[in-house]
Image (cartoon, rainbow, N blue to C red; front, side, top):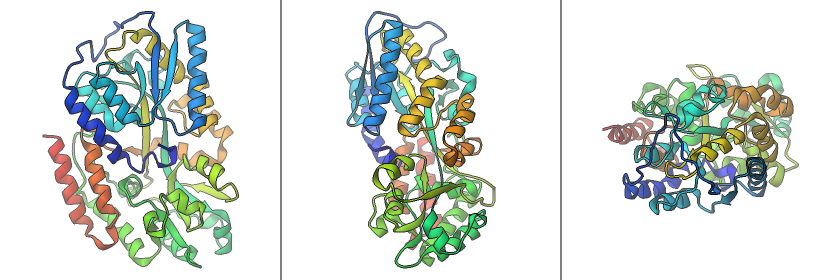
Length: 414
């Protein structure tokens, strides 16, 4: 899946994985957690990734090859056509990849059935990872895997449209009311002021700004029906009904970045993955990334991340951990950032990353206040159901939508 759309269908992507997890049972007996004892052998490692394209595949292969040469351990990188499906099939057949990309939505299922090695406490750079990312991959009190990189959402503004509307940098919206006002001003000539994907993975930023989210930070309590979330969706519905905002599907676009690139919308809300899409598909569009406006609770946005999972059944866990240690090092993470636009998951790389990419600083600055999506087992399916309803938000009741989501999330916790 392309990086630019990776987070648009995260709920649907997990359906195959969820089914496979239920079939896997608890057949993985060799240590789903570890206190220091790791398997070791001379077997080569298999590394499975879900790549955004040739640039990411080449960068990971280069990094793994470098480690393999210095360590003397063979390693093969597989760029999966469907990571969730192929990963699940490997576990079901009891022949999983040794090291692999793992999403927040898949963590709980694989951790609970013993498929994963909980190696987090053995990471030499454990304290360097952003705390919010560590929470995303902590299950039952254990850090299971190293966050490999992350993304946040911010406001993307078309520079030419902004100037044409008589707006300056002083007009970048700091509040919801200001966002509504500039969106209306920018909506001329058949173009909409703000176009976003009609899903929680975008509208959830408003929930966080209002002081809410679907679950608490540890995904142990459902909070979907909170007054903060209702307020957030009421605001989004008002912008939709006023014409200040439209969903990408309603303007004939597959996602917010496409609508923005085609100038169907003067602004969009997207993650830092948009940089690659703009460079490759819309190189002539000049844009600026600015922080999303604050809500009643202040700054807020969503973050998305994956980790480097290690299979509990890997015959060479020691080498796998050593490889992950290198892949999450400062040098490798900055190389990945240069190659395919991700943000490093370690704080020690932040200042250098900002110097390299000052235009994208708002994305990384959000690490201190961004909130993750729910990670409880089954949450991806609930979010997929919520997304299907949010697409009709303009003609629906936010309270009714959120009440149904609350019940679905509560059912996962029983």
